[in-house]
Image (cartoon, rainbow, N blue to C red; front, side, top):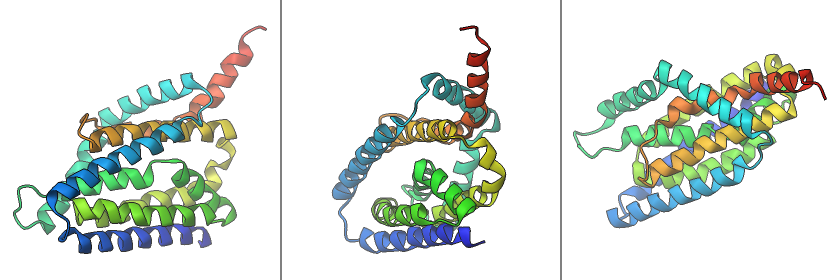
Length: 238
């Protein structure tokens, strides 16, 4: 259970950063808030582009993205997550037609949970009790939550629940997943995760309206496709 300490700390920092951002939200003019939000989209794009370069096998990433997106579309994950966000919005909004609660919940949940530090940090915490990566991620998420909440409001706070559940599950399942998590598989998982973050960045900037939540299953498919790819390559005569 010690491995869950990192997840608990990360959840707390999201709540703290979000609360501070909400406190400053009232004093930020809408024009400034919009500009800050777009700049956050650029920063998110930079994080995604930098991170996806860790991949070593383009074919595995492509196949994972395609099949993962098909799975997500069939399960309609985007609608389920957005419905959760809209449910929260109905409960906490005050009849404001421009409420951004759902957008804040969905966007921040994806940003905090899709990426290398989430996967690697949760696995390290579960396998070795080493929470150092999650502690570093917690510090980063604190400031991200602050910025997101200053423009999108209270929805960011509810994303802390998503962080708690998502990272907690990975941490608890780490021992079972360990035999499947080769270095190559983890690299491709990280690559796919950061590609999805690029899609999130495009949505934040208003360039696209991608259903990025439907792409999330792709993150875990390299666990299957990396060994399958290696098996096929080894079967081909030299």
